[in-house]
Length: 459
Image 1 (cartoon, rainbow, N blue to C red):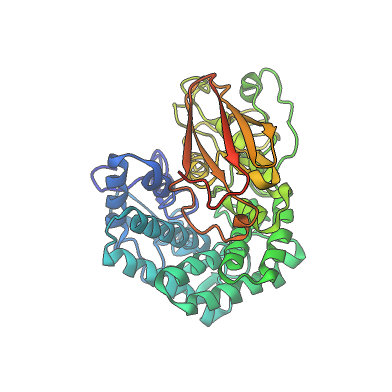
Image 2 (image 1 turned 60 degrees about the vertical axis):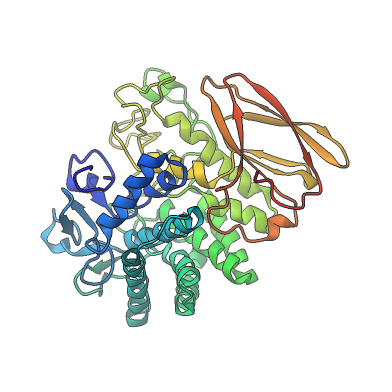
């Protein structure tokens, strides 16, 4: 929206497709654009920060829930008078999480961070601390005017502990870390131990859902990386096992005359939304899946890397691309629905439009390595849509053959490290200086890596 300086979350056909913080992409899509975009994208992202701060904060100190036309802000769902100030707590959690990632990235890139951006961000973090201290929970919906819990319970705020871990590090405030630990403990005892996560989507009430399930995993892993306390790693593994139950482990056979049937797309790796919206989706709403990579590195269990590969690898198959456009979809659009049931559009039929799935795909591009290698263990995992295999395995070196079988040029991030380096917390923006491998369509290249790496292969 050039006039006002912000990226809308959709095609602006209604206010919920104009602006929502977090969840569907508000201040999330700006992260990959800042990370990997050109100078125009960078300037647009900075304008987006200027537009959001301080006008995007509600009286309670959280972000406004939604808005439209650049200057109109809403506390909740204006379509229902009783929920006009019901702010989905997950939205401010997402906003805080991704904004701090971007503030850190700006500093790494040498971009000046304005004081009003930091002040607004810390205000939201302080509001979560106040919410926790007053209520002993984050709730599901909170009042945008008062900050009080309106609808309690749920793991809608599952990403909030992760957000507060980042805030504690960025602002050097241990109170944030204390609340992150206390709230994650609350979630574990009252929800995770019972096998329940709910309240992540704003449109599914408190149906169990995959979004808060994954967000809980993200929080447990960031708490582990921040404290190195073993209990958070154990809980992360429990949470990953629960999250895996939302991921389709096989390829569904669509009707031959359906849109998805004609495309011949696979479904292994799609993520089911929730028990109300009975459809899968390409990607996690709205995350890259990086917590699974973190968990693999800390635990050494390759199951988590395989799960991450399934989720990330299938996502581009649902992108409408010049080499493989999808009927009725603009180039660059991804539908959020992979329908293997007759819910709404019907089996094999997508919802036509621009969705958060595009943001999830961009996040996977900047947060997940295209090819991950531990030469010392002769371990290789390919996440990008290329082929890679080990062709020589000597005591001192490991030789890979990378092949691009697609019709598009590939720019692949290669991340190689030793088993010892994998035990060091990953941190944020790990791929910023990662080694890039360029492959033309059909091109193959051999690459030899030393097994005794002194540092991660980033250059």
